[in-house]
Length: 387
Image 1 (cartoon, helix red, strand yellow):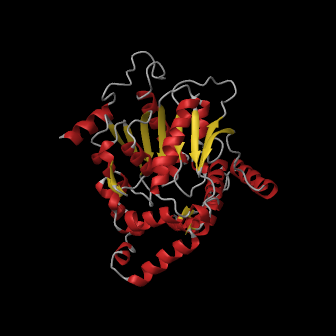
Image 2 (tube, rainbow, N blue to C red; image 1 turned 60 degrees about the horizontal axis):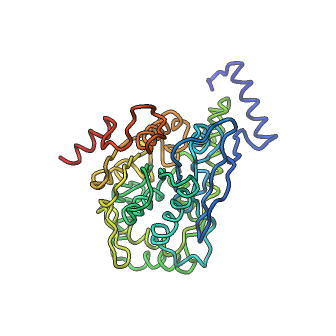
Image 3 (cartoon, helix red, strand yellow; image 1 turned 120 degrees about the vertical axis):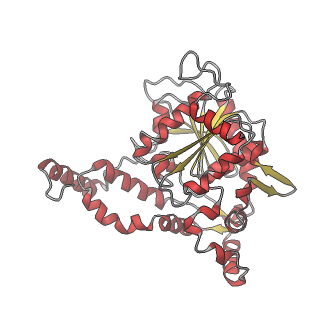
């Protein structure tokens, strides 16, 4: 809003204030309608309903959740929802989420998601769509779990993978830089507090997870009142603020053993930077991933900055094609921010079409989803990795 507001800005601001006072806000937070098609321990697979008047066509997309986050990360609000975008385009769209974590789930570790949840979800979508190959789109820890799943289970019917904001080198995360030396200094007391805490509670409680999310954007939290006033006439901007706030309030808990693995092996020891993870008597190596992968990072992401996300690109030596894209936005914004509508989503659309199964691509006649490098970006990156 201008320092001296124009009449139309005053009218728009007055309308927005009225909506906030009378209706609680300006954002349309209605979730896209969906149907449960499969479930198991901490596994709920949903099919999103088709859009009225839109024919469903092509391979299915399975949106993979990170732990602790609500499914609104993909369906933040109407007109700014990746789910809505896919559904309106006629893509068969599915989501796997995990529900509320209870104390009885405290013994579940990485293995549960890598060996049980994701393979079962992929199979459910595969069966529900007449045995079509499945495209995975995964954010944050969901991207890490997806890569590890595809490395451990190479026979899964997956056509491609897109990861967004998935950190592989924790040493490159500035948010954790001040505390990592303390965690690795062999000082027993702080470590004992953290370890005993999640063991007693059975995990990381949702309140702690919410605090962590808010801490990652503390600068925006502090300036939010001023920013709100400055954009009082911008309905879309205010709606985004409301939707992100609602998202933060809905964060959930981590199971105890999973949180322990994240804390000790990922944050303290930074094991993922090697591309290998030992689970029990086996070693999962990301070099065993055999599907095309697009890796995306947010240019202003404080939780998973570009330097922490990009290392996986060089490690995916078994993938037929690898593409790297830096897009505008922070950790959540790169997925469902206002700029994502014109920056992130078109890149995902193009990637899904590029690797669509025969006869289902929206690219039209002449598309060959099986060619090794069908875009300049993939060709250049793959050849660079091999050199």
